[in-house]
Image 1 (tube, rainbow, N blue to C red):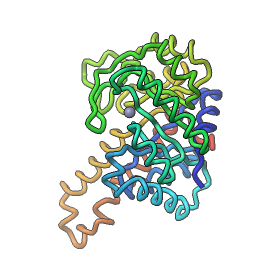
Image 2: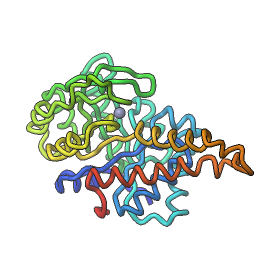
Image 3: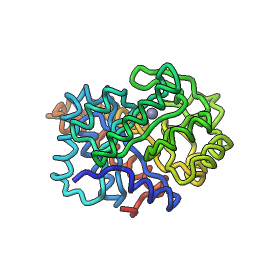
Amino acid sequence: MLVNAAEMLKKAEAGHYGLGAFNTNNMEWTLAILQAAEEAKSPLIIQCTSGAAKWMGGFKMCSAMVNAGMEALGTTVPVALHLDHGSYEACFEAIEAGFTSIMYDGSHEETFQINLDRTKELVEIAHSKGISIEAEVGGIGGTEDGVTSNGELADPNECKQIADLGVDFLACGIGNIHGLYPANWAGLSFERLGEIKALTGDLPLVLHGGTGIPEDQIKKAISLGISKINVNTDLQVVFAAATREYIEAGKDQQGKGYDPRKLLKGGREAIVARTKELMEEFGSVNKA
Ligand SMILES: [Zn+2]
């Protein structure tokens, strides 16, 4: 059975380790991520954007697939199904479809006041249903679901105002961006992270754009209060590389190599291996 993400992130914050929040895109992704969490004995946040949900046939399809996947694999570790970068409307749809955790991304609203008001409303609704909620202050650079922003440093006072609404975890820009990092990237701002942490106390903080941040910076960020690290592009890259290798070796043209179970097997296994590697890096192995 799915749980919300509040308790597992509280434990991570208190225990100074991080939990990966891995984005799913389809059935192969879903099963691979669930398998990795079980093998690593790690609590799991599996998440999905509105765009990925649409690709899969909607939030209900995604929710049903995760639930059925857990049953099929005999999952024993705690798993939360989280909406990644939800609009105000998408939050209601995901809750209706059985998600146990939502992110309301109000960082793109016209004013901070709108972000504040809507976050407040959604905190009340989510908590009345036992669902955890993440909010965002300051845009995360790069592009996700067609929304682009330049990696801001979140305003610590705005973080404090949103934190005080009772959100369960908070995403704040500290120089991180979505997608792959450019060669001239300045790195994470630990100074800003420290300022935000000083005002928000033991609230678990979220690092978006976890792909390609050097391991030493990830570890330092975790030590300074980051508890959830979002991983999407990383798994896409390893899946694509394994699939490309299969095709470039001409294996799809040998025997029944065109069978999707053969064609996608390498990519699926690559996701399992990489997810476990990241769980090791974040420190969540054996924390379930
Ligand atoms: Zn994000």
